[in-house]
Length: 309
Image (cartoon, rainbow, N blue to C red):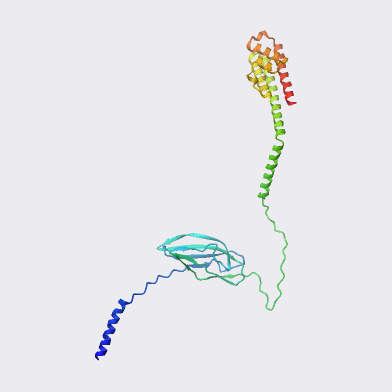
């Protein structure tokens, strides 16, 4: 009886000491929530685009990474994706993405489950949603039982109108080739083109000079004013200065006569006009002034012919 009492007392003591001697089990972390993935439609044809939506509701503290274009989408092919910004409401964050896929497999039922990566420190956990299924919609009729030969292909050779497109590469190449050809022609015929342009300018200036010179002569005949004589002489000097490419417009009468080697028409014409401009108009007759104009105009035409020849 005493022995039984001692064993019971020892058992009770050990039962009290065991909780203190044995450490409690480590707290297990809460399981991660699973994402949800589903197809936008239940049936799809071969090659037809189909959308797969992936949603993941999780605590805001989690770092979540959705699959990118390098993920495995078999038996589907990746076409594109559409991401939506994270929304957090009442302590729950929602990430959402729509993947644009297509399939060329002939399996009647095709499944897909895209995993979501969760970053926890140095570890990366992959959480996978439940597989989502899509059925293949077949467009060809099933062969009758016992048929082994395949039906013949239907042929369609009708032309389909295609909208014409502007060929920008050929157009740019043509423009570039034209510019290069024009640049080459300009470099090859530059001197000739320059001479022709200069000749064109001289013809234009000569016609303008003759018209303006005749107008000053007509005004002089009407008014007999020394101002019109002076304007005609200034016009004559400026024209010859441009024709000779010199500073004749700033020369005196003596310098102009010496420049043209004492030409008779220049010397007599300028002598008469100087008497009218700086002297008295009555000392020279109207006929003498008209002859002076004719001499100056005739000399200008000879100089133009010599330069153009």
